[in-house]
Amino acid sequence: MSDEMKRSDEMKRSDETPTPPDRAEPGRETAARPLPPKRAQIVLSGTKPTGEHLHLGNYFGALRQFVDLQDQHDTALYFIADYHSMTTLRNGPERRRNTLNVALDYLAAGLDPARAILFRQSDLPEVAELTWFLTSVTPMGMLERAHAYKAAIDKGEDVDHGLFTYPVLMAADILLYGSHLVPVGRDQKQHIEMARDMAHRFNRLYDCEALTLPEPYILEETATVPGTDGRKMSKSYGNTIAMFAAKKALQKSVMGIVTDSTPVEAPKDTAQAVFEIWSLFATPPEREAMLERARAGGLGYGDVKKDLFTRLMDYFEPMRARRAALEARPDEIEAILRAGAVRARALAMPVLEACREAAGVGPLR
Ligand code: AMP
Ligand code: TRP
Image (cartoon, rainbow, N blue to C red; front, side):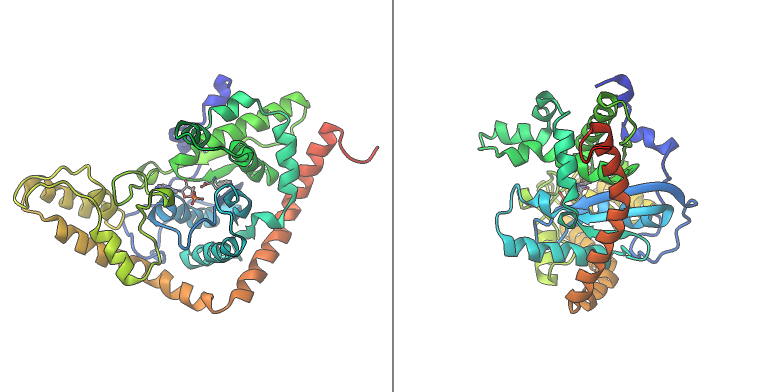
C-alpha cells in the first residue's frame, strides 16, 4: 500500500467530511440539530441481515450516521447486504425474514426513501460482475491480511472461499455506485482501505479513472460500542442489546451488563461497559456528572442500569411505534426496495460500463 493510500485514517476525515451534529440533545431523532449545507457527494453503506433486530452497536456505530448523512448529501444509498450474509447464514427463509427486518429497522430509525436510496444488495447482481473485475486485480496477500479471515484461521475454522473473498464483494458494493463516503463502525475500517486499494489498482492497471476512491466516515466516540460483557457488541458474541427487542428481553440484557464487584460505597472504575453504554443516552454534561459520582463512590450499578433501561426505552419509543406501523405493510416495504434498486442501477450502470470499456470486455467497438 502506498503512503497516499494509507492516509485514510478516520481522524483525517474532519477536514473533508461534514462535522457530526451536536449530540447535546440525544433521545429524539426529531431534535433540531444544525446541519452543514448539503454536499454533492455520494454516501453509501450496508448492513448484513444476520439477526432478528439491529443492536445498539449497529445503531450508534452506523445507522444514526446514515440518518444524519441522508440530509447532508445529495445522494445517499443504504442497502441490505443479503449476499454478504451468505457466508454465515445458510437458511433461505430466515435470510428473507431478516432482510425485511433490516428494512423495517432502517425505516423506523428515520431513513427516508424520499431522501435516500434504500435497496437490497441482490437486486443488483451487477455487483457480482464488478466483484470479478476486482478479484482479478486483488493480491492474495491483501486478502490474507484481512482481520475476519485471520481470526477464522486462528480459531482453526474451515474457511469457505466466500469468507476469504468477502472484502472484494464489499469493495464492489462501494465502488459500483461511485461512493465517496462510507459511514461504518471501526470494525469495517480495514475493508474500506482495501476497497481504496482495489480501486487504485484497477485504475492504474487499466490506465483509467473508472473507479472512485472512497473514504470511511467513523465517529470516534461510537466507533466501537461495547456489549454486555465489555467486548465489542456483536451478534457472534451473544452480548448484544437489541434496539427493538421486547421490553422484558431488553430489561434482561441491560440488567445483565457485566460489572466489577466493587461495593456501593467504593469509587468505581469508569472504564466499564455499563458507563459507556449509559453515556450513549446522555448529554455531555450528564455524562460528566455521572462519571464524577462514580469516581466519588456511593453509586450502585443496579441504579445505573435501571436508569439506562428507562432512557433506552424512551429513546427508542418513537422509532418502535413507527416500526410497529410499518410492520403491518410488508408490500410497501418491498415496493420501496424495488424502487430503490431502479435508482441504484441508474448510478451503477455508467460505472460498470466504464470498467468494461477499460478492461476491453463486452461487444466489439
Ligand atoms: P453488520 O451488522 O456487521 O452488518 O454491521 C452494520 C454496521 O454496524 C457496520 O457499519 C458496523 O461497523 C457497525 N457495527 C456493528 N457492531 C458495532 C459495534 N459494536 N460498535 C460500532 N459499530 C458497530
Ligand atoms: N461488511 C459490512 C459489515 O459486516 C456490511 C457491508 C457490506 C458494508 N457491504 C458494505 C458496509 C459496503 C459498508 C459498505 O458490517
